[in-house]
Length: 142
Image (cartoon, rainbow, N blue to C red):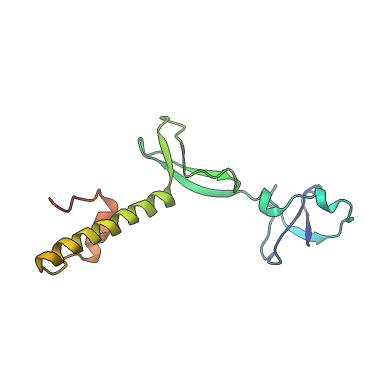
């Protein structure tokens, strides 16, 4: 197990679970780190990098459209949280996009089934799919 020490602050110690350490930075101050040796009696008290690392994602409010970059640990991640401006729902942009794509796939399947039962060709083009992703999906029946 590798233990790292930050060059900018010698009090910043952490260990890693994996052997892949390319480009690793200090999770406390984003400083440059190097491998160090510590006593075996102290090693259990040193936190893992994976537990300290800050993740980030973009969130967008469904009510007012406010966008924000949210920093969090892996355990703190929430797909939906409260908007700071209007108290509406803030959704992870990636999560929102994946739900739009799921709805688009369902819509295309419904459209295919409807047109195939009528014996008509499928008129959907790439530009139509992009428009459908950006707009609300129309109903298949109307």
